[in-house]
Image (cartoon, rainbow, N blue to C red; front, side, top):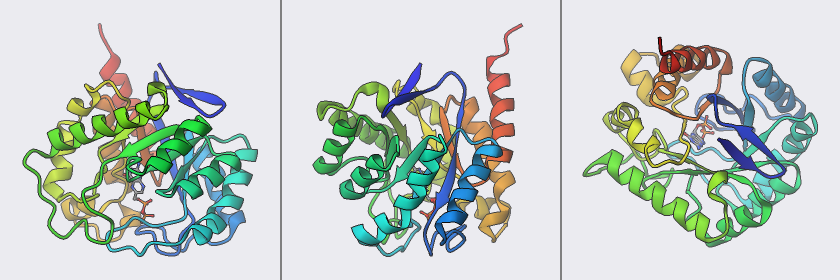
Length: 277
Ligand code: HH2
């Protein structure tokens, strides 16, 4: 199986690690680290050297309570980075909810559009179809401003699964090939700690939809609550544990800040899930 992207494809017969490049002043774990494009480019190359298969470049934080940024600010932050990193031959994803930003990023060499609003906007579906992008459709309850106020579900896994299948079908109806689509339960996006844990425990129910599944648990607050580690940048071992669990349950892609630890975790979980003697 392959993940069809603009102009290329990524094999899905082994777990993929997506490294995070946040070109933002306010991301929750690494905001303000990469304000200079050259730093961001060096960081992206470092992620790949450490074991990432692709990088996800974002110019707008989606942390709880984050303020939105406008199109030109977001494009100004990410475009030089995307162009330079794509020029180096890396597979680049753009983490955006705005069709204008996605279109500019694809013209600059991105191959994937990672939309945390799951292409609810018809203009975004059009850009996805027209550019031939690989697509990540992520579940979120509410908006980053309000999503952690009181998230409620009857059955979080069933609701997230049904939402993702509906949005995937909507993207297909707009002309996005099924083989370009990856779905993501949106760990931490309008979810309590228990909702996140339940999604990880029953991830197989999302895998059973037949769409490749991505998991982005990296450094998130629920890991801090479980481990008692306040500093998000010290949660990479906890993150690697989620990578192992996700891969064992059949996840195709893990989105992480520290690919080294998660690459090792993914390889072990992958080997265990395949062995038959
Ligand atoms: N999580 C974040 C951002 N984008 N995209 C997908 N598909 N899945 C995720 O879980 C996901 C995502 C949040 O992490 P980060 O980018 O580090 O933080 P911030 O949004 O504050 O920049």
